[in-house]
Length: 353
Image 1: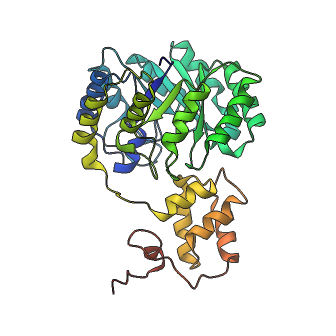
Image 2 (image 1 turned 120 degrees about the vertical axis):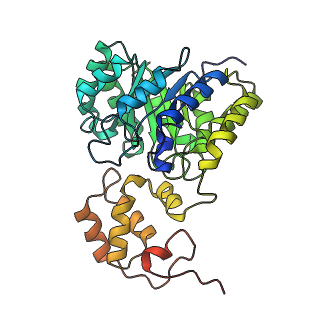
Protein backbone atom coordinates (compact mmCIF):
# COMPACT_ATOMS: atom_id res chain seq x y z
CA UNK A 1 0.00 0.00 0.00
CA UNK A 2 1.40 3.36 -0.98
CA UNK A 3 0.87 6.50 1.05
CA UNK A 4 2.48 9.89 1.53
CA UNK A 5 3.82 9.21 5.03
CA UNK A 6 6.45 11.36 6.66
CA UNK A 7 7.58 10.33 10.12
CA UNK A 8 9.19 13.17 12.03
CA UNK A 9 11.21 11.80 14.91
CA UNK A 10 11.35 14.18 17.83
CA UNK A 11 13.32 12.03 20.29
CA UNK A 12 16.13 14.55 20.50
CA UNK A 13 13.75 17.47 21.12
CA UNK A 14 10.54 16.37 22.88
CA UNK A 15 12.42 13.46 24.40
CA UNK A 16 14.80 15.87 26.08
CA UNK A 17 12.09 16.83 28.59
CA UNK A 18 12.31 13.34 30.08
CA UNK A 19 16.05 13.61 30.77
CA UNK A 20 16.20 17.24 31.89
CA UNK A 21 17.43 18.45 28.49
CA UNK A 22 20.61 16.41 28.85
CA UNK A 23 21.24 15.18 25.30
CA UNK A 24 24.84 16.03 24.47
CA UNK A 25 26.33 16.97 21.14
CA UNK A 26 27.70 13.43 20.86
CA UNK A 27 24.25 11.99 21.59
CA UNK A 28 22.74 14.26 18.95
CA UNK A 29 25.28 13.32 16.28
CA UNK A 30 25.03 9.61 17.05
CA UNK A 31 21.23 9.36 17.15
CA UNK A 32 20.77 11.65 14.15
CA UNK A 33 23.04 9.43 12.08
CA UNK A 34 21.38 6.24 13.31
CA UNK A 35 17.93 7.60 12.46
CA UNK A 36 19.09 8.65 9.02
CA UNK A 37 20.62 5.22 8.38
CA UNK A 38 17.35 3.40 9.19
CA UNK A 39 15.30 5.61 6.88
CA UNK A 40 13.93 8.48 9.00
CA UNK A 41 13.91 11.61 6.86
CA UNK A 42 12.88 14.26 9.39
CA UNK A 43 14.69 14.65 12.72
CA UNK A 44 14.03 17.32 15.33
CA UNK A 45 16.79 18.32 17.75
CA UNK A 46 17.55 20.75 20.56
CA UNK A 47 15.94 22.01 23.73
CA UNK A 48 12.40 20.81 24.38
CA UNK A 49 11.05 24.36 24.22
CA UNK A 50 13.17 25.19 21.23
CA UNK A 51 15.54 27.95 20.21
CA UNK A 52 16.83 30.26 22.95
CA UNK A 53 14.91 28.37 25.68
CA UNK A 54 18.00 27.77 27.82
CA UNK A 55 18.95 31.44 27.74
CA UNK A 56 15.42 32.40 28.74
CA UNK A 57 15.52 30.20 31.82
CA UNK A 58 13.29 27.31 30.73
CA UNK A 59 15.70 24.66 31.94
CA UNK A 60 19.32 24.69 30.88
CA UNK A 61 20.28 22.19 28.20
CA UNK A 62 23.82 20.90 28.44
CA UNK A 63 24.64 22.24 24.97
CA UNK A 64 23.92 25.55 23.28
CA UNK A 65 21.62 25.85 20.28
CA UNK A 66 24.64 26.35 18.07
CA UNK A 67 26.33 23.22 19.41
CA UNK A 68 23.20 21.18 18.63
CA UNK A 69 23.07 22.68 15.14
CA UNK A 70 26.71 21.76 14.53
CA UNK A 71 26.19 18.24 15.87
CA UNK A 72 23.33 17.50 13.47
CA UNK A 73 24.65 19.30 10.40
CA UNK A 74 28.03 17.59 10.66
CA UNK A 75 26.67 14.04 10.27
CA UNK A 76 23.50 14.22 8.16
CA UNK A 77 23.68 13.93 4.38
CA UNK A 78 20.15 12.76 3.43
CA UNK A 79 17.79 13.40 6.33
CA UNK A 80 16.45 16.86 7.12
CA UNK A 81 16.85 18.25 10.62
CA UNK A 82 15.04 21.07 12.36
CA UNK A 83 14.33 22.78 15.66
CA UNK A 84 11.35 24.14 17.56
CA UNK A 85 10.73 27.88 17.83
CA UNK A 86 8.27 29.57 20.18
CA UNK A 87 7.81 33.30 19.50
CA UNK A 88 8.62 35.22 22.65
CA UNK A 89 11.10 32.59 23.78
CA UNK A 90 13.02 32.45 20.51
CA UNK A 91 14.21 35.61 18.78
CA UNK A 92 14.22 36.30 15.06
CA UNK A 93 18.02 36.19 15.07
CA UNK A 94 17.86 32.60 16.34
CA UNK A 95 16.32 31.66 13.00
CA UNK A 96 19.24 33.38 11.28
CA UNK A 97 21.64 31.25 13.33
CA UNK A 98 19.84 28.07 12.33
CA UNK A 99 19.98 29.06 8.68
CA UNK A 100 23.76 29.47 8.97
CA UNK A 101 23.94 25.71 9.57
CA UNK A 102 21.61 24.87 6.70
CA UNK A 103 18.71 23.78 8.90
CA UNK A 104 16.00 22.56 6.53
CA UNK A 105 12.81 22.87 8.56
CA UNK A 106 11.56 24.84 11.51
CA UNK A 107 8.53 24.28 13.73
CA UNK A 108 7.02 27.51 14.94
CA UNK A 109 4.87 26.75 17.96
CA UNK A 110 2.18 28.98 19.41
CA UNK A 111 -0.86 28.33 21.52
CA UNK A 112 -3.67 27.89 19.01
CA UNK A 113 -5.25 31.06 20.39
CA UNK A 114 -2.08 33.07 19.65
CA UNK A 115 -1.28 32.15 16.04
CA UNK A 116 -0.96 35.82 15.13
CA UNK A 117 2.30 35.95 17.11
CA UNK A 118 3.96 33.72 14.52
CA UNK A 119 3.80 36.01 11.48
CA UNK A 120 7.28 37.58 11.66
CA UNK A 121 8.87 34.23 12.49
CA UNK A 122 7.27 32.46 9.56
CA UNK A 123 8.30 35.24 7.21
CA UNK A 124 11.89 35.22 8.48
CA UNK A 125 12.19 31.45 8.12
CA UNK A 126 10.72 31.53 4.61
CA UNK A 127 13.27 34.16 3.58
CA UNK A 128 15.93 31.62 4.52
CA UNK A 129 14.23 28.97 2.38
CA UNK A 130 13.17 26.79 5.32
CA UNK A 131 10.21 24.43 5.27
CA UNK A 132 7.93 25.99 7.88
CA UNK A 133 5.62 23.98 10.10
CA UNK A 134 3.15 25.84 12.31
CA UNK A 135 2.48 23.85 15.45
CA UNK A 136 -0.81 24.84 17.09
CA UNK A 137 -0.17 23.91 20.71
CA UNK A 138 -3.24 22.96 22.80
CA UNK A 139 -5.24 22.61 19.60
CA UNK A 140 -8.20 21.20 21.51
CA UNK A 141 -9.12 24.54 23.12
CA UNK A 142 -10.72 25.67 19.84
CA UNK A 143 -13.64 23.95 18.15
CA UNK A 144 -12.82 22.57 14.68
CA UNK A 145 -14.39 25.44 12.72
CA UNK A 146 -12.49 28.07 14.71
CA UNK A 147 -9.32 25.99 14.47
CA UNK A 148 -9.67 25.90 10.69
CA UNK A 149 -9.78 29.70 10.59
CA UNK A 150 -6.45 29.80 12.41
CA UNK A 151 -5.04 27.34 9.90
CA UNK A 152 -5.99 29.71 7.10
CA UNK A 153 -4.26 32.59 8.88
CA UNK A 154 -1.06 30.56 9.24
CA UNK A 155 -1.24 29.48 5.61
CA UNK A 156 -1.60 33.12 4.55
CA UNK A 157 1.51 33.98 6.57
CA UNK A 158 3.43 31.46 4.44
CA UNK A 159 3.41 28.23 6.45
CA UNK A 160 4.03 25.10 4.39
CA UNK A 161 2.06 22.94 6.80
CA UNK A 162 0.08 23.09 10.02
CA UNK A 163 0.15 20.67 12.93
CA UNK A 164 -2.83 19.57 14.97
CA UNK A 165 -1.26 19.17 18.41
CA UNK A 166 -2.76 17.01 21.15
CA UNK A 167 -0.65 18.62 23.86
CA UNK A 168 -2.47 16.91 26.72
CA UNK A 169 -2.81 13.48 25.10
CA UNK A 170 -6.58 13.45 25.50
CA UNK A 171 -7.91 13.38 21.93
CA UNK A 172 -9.84 10.57 20.23
CA UNK A 173 -9.87 9.65 16.53
CA UNK A 174 -13.39 11.01 16.03
CA UNK A 175 -12.26 14.47 17.18
CA UNK A 176 -9.24 14.43 14.87
CA UNK A 177 -11.62 13.64 12.04
CA UNK A 178 -13.77 16.66 12.91
CA UNK A 179 -10.71 18.93 12.76
CA UNK A 180 -9.59 17.44 9.47
CA UNK A 181 -12.90 17.94 7.71
CA UNK A 182 -13.28 21.49 9.06
CA UNK A 183 -9.81 22.38 7.76
CA UNK A 184 -10.48 20.87 4.36
CA UNK A 185 -13.56 23.02 3.97
CA UNK A 186 -11.34 26.09 3.64
CA UNK A 187 -7.72 24.99 3.14
CA UNK A 188 -5.66 22.42 1.27
CA UNK A 189 -2.48 23.05 3.28
CA UNK A 190 -0.39 20.04 4.28
CA UNK A 191 -1.21 18.74 7.75
CA UNK A 192 0.69 17.05 10.55
CA UNK A 193 -0.30 15.44 13.84
CA UNK A 194 1.58 15.54 17.14
CA UNK A 195 0.08 13.22 19.73
CA UNK A 196 0.90 12.75 23.39
CA UNK A 197 0.15 9.47 25.09
CA UNK A 198 -1.58 10.35 28.36
CA UNK A 199 -4.60 8.17 27.55
CA UNK A 200 -2.50 5.69 25.55
CA UNK A 201 -4.06 6.91 22.30
CA UNK A 202 -1.04 8.43 20.53
CA UNK A 203 -0.40 5.57 18.07
CA UNK A 204 -4.09 4.98 17.36
CA UNK A 205 -4.64 8.69 16.79
CA UNK A 206 -1.57 8.90 14.55
CA UNK A 207 -2.74 6.00 12.39
CA UNK A 208 -6.19 7.53 12.07
CA UNK A 209 -4.69 10.90 11.13
CA UNK A 210 -2.69 9.23 8.35
CA UNK A 211 -5.76 7.42 7.05
CA UNK A 212 -7.61 10.75 6.92
CA UNK A 213 -4.87 12.41 4.89
CA UNK A 214 -2.45 13.96 7.36
CA UNK A 215 1.02 13.78 5.81
CA UNK A 216 3.37 14.24 8.77
CA UNK A 217 3.32 12.37 12.06
CA UNK A 218 5.48 13.07 15.10
CA UNK A 219 7.02 10.20 17.01
CA UNK A 220 9.87 9.50 19.40
CA UNK A 221 11.89 6.39 20.14
CA UNK A 222 10.40 4.55 23.13
CA UNK A 223 7.80 7.35 23.19
CA UNK A 224 10.32 9.46 25.13
CA UNK A 225 8.90 12.91 25.78
CA UNK A 226 7.12 15.36 28.04
CA UNK A 227 4.55 13.89 30.43
CA UNK A 228 3.47 10.44 29.17
CA UNK A 229 5.48 10.92 26.01
CA UNK A 230 4.64 10.62 22.34
CA UNK A 231 3.67 8.02 19.80
CA UNK A 232 6.52 5.51 19.80
CA UNK A 233 8.44 5.62 16.52
CA UNK A 234 9.12 1.90 16.44
CA UNK A 235 5.54 0.92 17.34
CA UNK A 236 4.05 3.23 14.73
CA UNK A 237 6.43 1.84 12.10
CA UNK A 238 5.50 -1.73 13.05
CA UNK A 239 1.78 -0.93 13.01
CA UNK A 240 1.92 0.78 9.63
CA UNK A 241 4.08 -1.97 8.13
CA UNK A 242 1.59 -4.57 9.31
CA UNK A 243 -1.23 -2.54 7.75
CA UNK A 244 0.59 -2.50 4.43
CA UNK A 245 1.87 1.08 4.40
CA UNK A 246 5.37 1.83 3.18
CA UNK A 247 7.09 4.08 5.68
CA UNK A 248 10.61 3.81 4.29
CA UNK A 249 11.87 2.99 7.79
CA UNK A 250 13.54 -0.37 8.44
CA UNK A 251 11.58 -1.89 11.35
CA UNK A 252 14.23 -4.27 12.69
CA UNK A 253 16.96 -1.66 12.52
CA UNK A 254 14.96 1.05 14.26
CA UNK A 255 14.00 -1.41 17.00
CA UNK A 256 17.70 -2.02 17.52
CA UNK A 257 18.51 1.72 17.66
CA UNK A 258 15.67 2.32 20.09
CA UNK A 259 16.70 -0.49 22.41
CA UNK A 260 20.42 0.28 22.37
CA UNK A 261 20.35 4.03 22.81
CA UNK A 262 16.99 5.18 24.21
CA UNK A 263 15.59 2.30 26.27
CA UNK A 264 18.26 2.84 29.00
CA UNK A 265 16.98 6.42 29.40
CA UNK A 266 13.37 5.44 30.06
CA UNK A 267 12.74 5.98 33.75
CA UNK A 268 8.99 5.66 34.20
CA UNK A 269 7.85 2.10 33.60
CA UNK A 270 4.21 2.74 34.49
CA UNK A 271 1.62 5.51 34.46
CA UNK A 272 1.84 8.57 36.67
CA UNK A 273 -1.78 9.21 37.75
CA UNK A 274 -1.44 12.94 37.19
CA UNK A 275 -0.38 12.37 33.58
CA UNK A 276 -3.56 10.38 33.03
CA UNK A 277 -5.63 13.17 34.58
CA UNK A 278 -3.88 15.65 32.29
CA UNK A 279 -5.12 13.72 29.27
CA UNK A 280 -8.58 13.35 30.77
CA UNK A 281 -8.93 17.07 31.51
CA UNK A 282 -6.98 18.55 28.56
CA UNK A 283 -4.30 19.98 30.84
CA UNK A 284 -0.82 20.87 29.59
CA UNK A 285 1.71 19.31 31.94
CA UNK A 286 4.18 22.17 31.60
CA UNK A 287 2.06 23.80 34.34
CA UNK A 288 2.29 20.85 36.72
CA UNK A 289 4.59 22.74 39.10
CA UNK A 290 1.82 25.29 39.69
CA UNK A 291 -0.57 22.44 40.52
CA UNK A 292 1.94 20.92 42.94
CA UNK A 293 2.52 24.28 44.59
CA UNK A 294 -1.10 25.02 45.43
CA UNK A 295 -2.29 21.47 46.03
CA UNK A 296 0.37 21.22 48.72
CA UNK A 297 -0.29 24.68 50.13
CA UNK A 298 -4.02 24.06 50.58
CA UNK A 299 -3.91 20.26 51.06
CA UNK A 300 -6.16 19.56 48.10
CA UNK A 301 -6.09 16.63 45.71
CA UNK A 302 -3.92 17.69 42.72
CA UNK A 303 -6.01 15.61 40.32
CA UNK A 304 -9.18 17.42 41.31
CA UNK A 305 -7.37 20.74 41.16
CA UNK A 306 -6.40 20.03 37.55
CA UNK A 307 -9.96 19.09 36.65
CA UNK A 308 -11.38 22.22 38.27
CA UNK A 309 -8.75 24.46 36.65
CA UNK A 310 -9.52 23.22 33.14
CA UNK A 311 -13.16 24.11 33.59
CA UNK A 312 -11.92 27.71 33.67
CA UNK A 313 -8.83 27.73 31.43
CA UNK A 314 -7.21 25.04 29.27
CA UNK A 315 -4.55 27.32 27.79
CA UNK A 316 -2.77 28.78 30.82
CA UNK A 317 -2.48 28.07 34.54
CA UNK A 318 -1.95 31.45 36.13
CA UNK A 319 -0.90 31.36 39.77
CA UNK A 320 -3.72 33.64 40.84
CA UNK A 321 -6.39 31.46 39.24
CA UNK A 322 -4.96 28.15 40.48
CA UNK A 323 -4.58 29.49 44.01
CA UNK A 324 -8.11 30.84 44.00
CA UNK A 325 -9.51 27.48 42.90
CA UNK A 326 -7.38 25.54 45.40
CA UNK A 327 -8.41 27.88 48.22
CA UNK A 328 -12.07 27.30 47.49
CA UNK A 329 -11.87 23.56 47.09
CA UNK A 330 -12.94 21.29 49.88
CA UNK A 331 -9.96 19.72 51.61
CA UNK A 332 -9.53 16.10 50.70
CA UNK A 333 -9.77 13.44 53.38
CA UNK A 334 -9.16 10.47 51.13
CA UNK A 335 -5.74 10.56 49.49
CA UNK A 336 -4.60 8.50 46.52
CA UNK A 337 -2.02 5.83 47.26
CA UNK A 338 1.04 5.29 45.11
CA UNK A 339 4.79 5.44 45.18
CA UNK A 340 4.85 8.04 42.43
CA UNK A 341 1.63 9.95 42.33
CA UNK A 342 -0.21 11.94 44.93
CA UNK A 343 1.26 10.95 48.28
CA UNK A 344 4.49 12.88 48.17
CA UNK A 345 2.66 16.12 47.54
CA UNK A 346 0.71 15.66 50.77
CA UNK A 347 3.58 14.48 52.95
CA UNK A 348 2.22 10.93 53.36
CA UNK A 349 4.42 7.88 53.03
CA UNK A 350 3.51 4.66 51.23
CA UNK A 351 1.93 2.11 53.54
CA UNK A 352 3.52 -1.20 52.57
CA UNK A 353 1.73 -3.27 55.19
